[in-house]
Every structure is written in C-alpha cells, then in structure tokens.
Length: 203
Image (cartoon, rainbow, N blue to C red; front, side):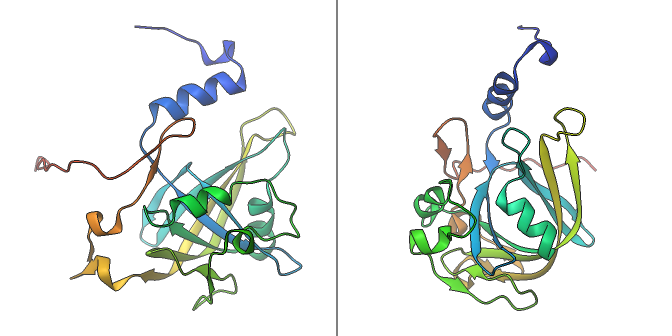
C-alpha cells in the first residue's frame, strides 16, 4: 500500500490522484449568462447532489492560477444557471464546449447546440439534454488554494424547475438505461452506464 502525504505533492499530482480514484464522476453541463447577455456553457465533473429538501446540487469550478472562470463569474453576478446531464447523444458536442473561449463568445453557438427558454429563470437551457435543472444560487464558497488566492468556487444551487424528456420518465422515476448518462474518468476517458446490480440496504 502506497503511503503519500498530499502536502508533499504538487497541485497537478493531487489532481491526478483524485480524478483517477474518484470514478466514475457525473458531468454537469452548465449554461450561464454574462452581464452582456452572452450564453456561456461548460462541463464540470466535480458535481453532485447536496440535498433533496429542498433539491440542491453542487458544482465545483476550479480556478486557473487563482483566476475565476467565466461560469463562476456569471453565476455570482446573475444568481442563476442551468445544469444539464451529459449523455451518449450529446457528449461529443459538450466536450467541444470545454475549449477556452473569451467571455464574449458563446460555446453554444460554436457547437451548434440549440438554446431553449427556461421556465422560472432567465438563463436558457440546451435542448439536446434529456435532463436539465433550472437553478438559483443558494450559496457560493471560495475554497482551497493559498491565502487570498482560492483554488476553486463551490457553487450550490437550488433546483427550481426540472425538465425531463418523456422517453426516460415513467411513474416518477428516470430509467438509467434510457438516460444513458456519461461519466468522467481521468485524462480523456469517459464511461457509459455498465452492468447494473441490486443490493438491499440493511433495515
């Protein structure tokens, strides 16, 4: 068993250990809007559920050399965003949105994805996703990094509206095989939903 002190590693080395071990990770494809009205979009795999009462989800947006990314800036300014689940049908276009574009250029337009209006917030969603969550900012935390130079922005959003494609929805449940969500591994690797099995939880 290897014994390693993270304090003896570089940020990059810690990153590689984490993304190589904590797998598979769900991918949040997030749309946000700049103050000038440009729709930005980007994928994030540091993403999960926070609460079901009320429904809340978290997205951790890593900073680059201490600089806040456009997604975090936009969310903090507007306090609204949309999270989409990435699936086998849209993963290639979503991957294209990871390109570094200036804030005045839209990743959605670049990839040819289709914008659709949201119901309760001003940030549009993307039609090609089978599941999307309209979110309002609950709280944002600056974490990690060094003093006065955080390493990430932890965004916690309250889900105010769900959009779920009819083909994957039945009796209040989502069919995981029909959703066909894609998860993130390390490097350039992704994974599909594989074999499923059931284990009953103890009473």
